[in-house]
Amino acid sequence: MSLTSFPGGANSSSQTTPITKVTMPALSEMKRQGKPISALTAYDYSTSRLADEAGIDFILVGDSLAMVVLGHENTLAVTVDEMIHHTRAVRRAVHRALVVADMPFGSYSTVAEGLANAVRFVKEAGAEAVKIEGPRIELVRALTEAEIPVVAHLGLTPQSVHRMGGYRVQARTAETVLQLKSDAHALAHAGAAAIVLEGIPREVAAQITAELPVPTIGIGAGPDCDGQILVFHDLLNLTFAPAAKFVRRYADAGTLIRTAIEHYREDVEHHAFPSDEESYHLPESVRNTLDDREQAATLRKA
Ligand code: KIV
Image (cartoon, rainbow, N blue to C red; front, side, top):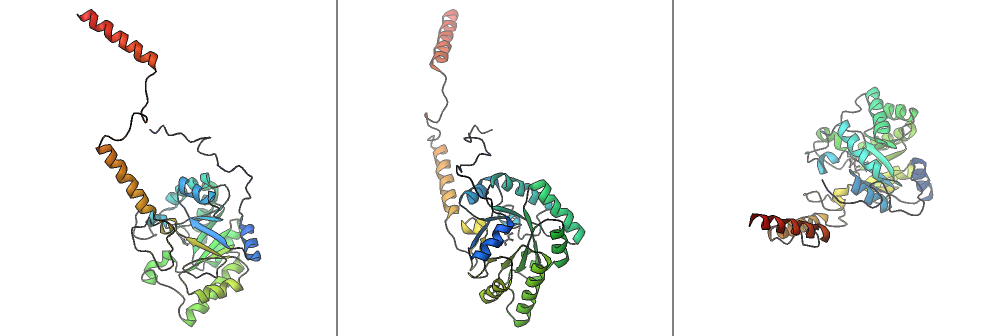
């Protein structure tokens, strides 16, 4: 067990000034005012707390956790229970940002199933909205009627990896562009509160963004969306894979962490950690008492 102390307890926030909670209506207002929305994925307490303290507006507990946290080959294997477990950790950390939970593959195959699982994300994990992939118009309508805000996700939808035959840029022909635009309008009309646009040409994302009344959040969709989202591990180089064209690495946490761990291992191997200053000591009075007792025992034996 660690004796590490968390000043003020794990739930305390270093924020001293009152915070204005980001809500779904606040995101729409940001679109109206032309204020860019910053979004990032996060999957655990410490990293989502850092994202929240850094002022990110929208934290997505993405099903990308299947790959970047759990080491699966794609996003398909992660379960509702696993997603809820991580969403609860994020919820405990985040005070300002909107917390959105990704519904995993197979958890919304029917409207009834989608509704039941979305309710779990709200009730058990404290999600403020759920995200679903594809033009699931009926489900979006049902969730909206059930008072569960929905973020839709169009374009390169990773849960469709087998249908798409890999992770490929979508909407590159006139026909598929028109289909995508029609899906985006239908989703907004059905009540989607925001739409993630992934892996589509900049021009298409720009048109959809200009036409829709709800915010678009882009990832690999160019700079004209109302907001941008990146995967936490992409931003920080923690993916062990080359970055996609749309990723910008803002830091090399992979190298930072590996180097720190190497230094720790070397210090252990060279008896350089822990030092005397990093050790607990007996009070002098107890040391003296023990010395006295040892001396008395030695005298008795002599
Ligand atoms: O799961 C995920 O990370 C996503 C992206 C849109 C960021 O869905």
